[in-house]
Each structure stands twice: as C-alpha cells, then as structure tokens.
Amino acid sequence: MDKTAIRVDDVCKVYKLYNRPAERLFDALGFAKKGRFKEHMALNHVSFEVKKGETVGIIGTNGSGKSTILKIITGVLHPTSGNVRIEGRVSALLELGAGFNMEYTGIENVYLNGMMMGFTREEMDARMEDILSFADIGEFVNQPCKTYSSGMFVRLAFAVSINIDPEILIVDEALSVGDVFFQAKCYKKFEDFKVQGKTIVFVSHDISSVARYCDRVILLNQGVRLADGKPKETINLYKKVLLNQSQNIESGQVLSGAKQADGVLWKSNYQLNPDVNEYGTGEAEIIDFAVIDEYGTYTNCIQKGTSFQIRSKVLFQSEIKDPIFTYTFKTVQGTAVTGTNTMYERAGIGLAKSGEIYVATFRQNMDLQGGEYLLSLSCTGYVGGEFRAYHRLYDVMGVTVISDKNTVGFFDMNSETTVERAEA
Image 1 (cartoon, rainbow, N blue to C red):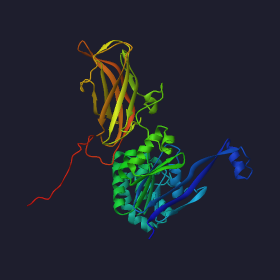
Image 2 (image 1 turned 60 degrees about the vertical axis):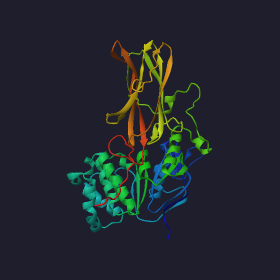
Image 3 (image 1 turned 45 degrees about the vertical axis):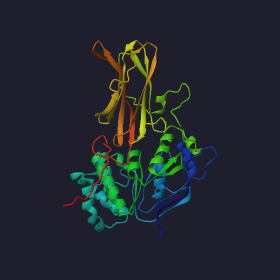
C-alpha cells in the first residue's frame, strides 16, 4: 500500500514578465517576439514527498515559491514541467475568501463552497452545525459576505475547509488573520487531524508554529528546494537565508562567530522598527546593537531553550559616571515581560569619558514562550540621585522565539516533571 499522500516530481514553474500589458495580448495571439518578455523561474526543479499522516511546513522568504507550489499541488496552477500526484481528498485554504460570492450570505457561501468541492446539499446540511460552531461568527452567517471583516472571512472559510472530512489539508498563511483564540482552535484541530492520520501541508511566516506542529519542514529559496528535514535544523538554515547567507549554506560552510566586514553595522542585519520611540539627553548614543544566536549568527529568531546574546554599543559624547546599559522584552501588546541592566547584574564600568565607546553584552538562555516580542535598549544613569535617560530606543526591533513546547504565561519554569502511581 502506497503511504505517499503527495508526490512532487521535478516541478518547474516559469512566468513570463512583460514590459507592457499589450505585449501579453500579442503573446496570447501568437505574435510574441523575443525581447518582449523575460522569464522568471518561480520553481526550479522542485521535488519532495509528503507521507500520509505527516504535518509538513513550507517556509522561505517572500518570492521563494511557497504559495506557487501549494497552488500547483491543489490544481489552481499547472506546472510548466514536472508532475504532481495526490492520493486522497484535498481541502485547500489558499487565498482569503477565494470562492466566496460577496453578495451571498455566509450560509449561502457554505453551500456554494461545498458544491464546488463535490458535496450535495444534504451532505453539507449534515456538516452545517459543525461548520457554524467552529466559525463562531454569530448572526453574521445570515448577512452578505461583503459586510464581513477579514477575520470573519477566514473563520468561515477555514471552518468549511476542515469540516468536510478532508484527507489532505492545504493551508497558506490563513491563520495569521484570525485572533489568538481562533488560532488556538485551529491548531487544536491540526492536532486532532494528526491523531486521525490526516495529512497537513501549510505555509506560514509564524516560525514558532511551524516548529511546534510540523513533523518536517521544507525550505524554499528563490524557487529551489534548499532543505527538507527536521524543524529545528531547517529553521536554523532559514535564519541564515534571512541574513543573505544562503551561499554559505549551499556550499556546506558553517558560520562561526558573529563576524562582519569592517565598517558594517551589526544592526544592518535586521529589519528595524521605522516608528521606533527614540529619545534622550544626547550625552550618550547607542550607535549599534545586535541579537546573536547560539551559533554566532546575527538573527532575530531565537530557539527557545538555547543560549543567545544581546549587544549594545554606546558612544559617550560627555563624561558620565556609572552609566547603565539596559534591555527589555515586551509583547506586541506592550506588556513588559523581562529584561535586565548592568546595574542589576553588577557589571558597572565606573567612569566613561567623552569619545569612548563601550559594548555591553548580555548572555542568557531564551526561556520565553514561543511568539513575537519587541526589544528595547537604553543607556541611562543617575546624576545627583536623579534618574537620567541618555539614549533610549523603545521597540527598536522584533524578536521571534521559536518553540515546540509552550507552558502557561510568558516564561517557562523548565520543570522536570514526573507522574507516578501512588498506593491507595
């Protein structure tokens, strides 16, 4: 018995990019001339298999071909060359609201989508209660979909997709739209599907969820399958791709130590907050900073339970006695979760003279729960007993914590847990 649910064999997808819209028409009529378009290889000889019952994540930077391969798997697109074989009933959630008629009500769209998937009205009637319960959008199910928020769209579309008893579920970034409670419900459904032996393939930028729920992860980069393996190892490679280091990965080189060319700022490795809240007296200036993982790589993705560093480089414009270097992690909702400073850590430097540069390095294990956080940095101190902020960068960058096990709250107590049967 074949245990393969999806087989992708040497798939290529080439798009023609035209200089002008009219040239697309000329090409369709058979009057294409060389030079009127250029070819873009969205997928370049991609092959992989997904076994029945596996949950496989597909990750990669924007434009790497993630959504394209899902559309080819589900038949929305045809490959330029290569083949895809599917074994089992497929349910796909690829684009928000795809297949919905905006003038129809939610109920009418449930029947419409069911019909498109090959179900009779009676079969959809039998599933309606489960669909509406999962979507949980109340009386809006009787309103036209053009009145729905994006969140309502995804709730209803996802509810239809997972309640038609699919053998294979294909999801493309849809969960990022729902609220945290809906996402938790969806991932609980993922776990139920895994227990039932169903197959799940999903694309997500939520690396923490990929690490937690996937048995395997496929990394695409510029249309090429760069890696296929266990979540932790594949995500580590993805982090290097984010730093434009894919050439080192392909050649098998391992980057050791946080080293850069002279004159290149550490912070140039990260996407910084354009709306950072920055202020201070100007007597000191944070001129550079970095987050560095256990492998010595500049990255804003840290695996939970591993060691990492935060570095802050400060130029002193004035003579300052006992400056304090700080960092703080906050949730995206603005709640301060944890942080420390050189005063708490008893790592003071005494007197910093004008023109001197100091680097504060904070080394620790990442014990925060998986998710997204905001990092703030500052250089502060006390003058005559009064607090003074020399330079502060609030929410200067985001940090993603990748986790395959979360506990309650923000922080993991790392408990060693046993349960034993006791005598009555």
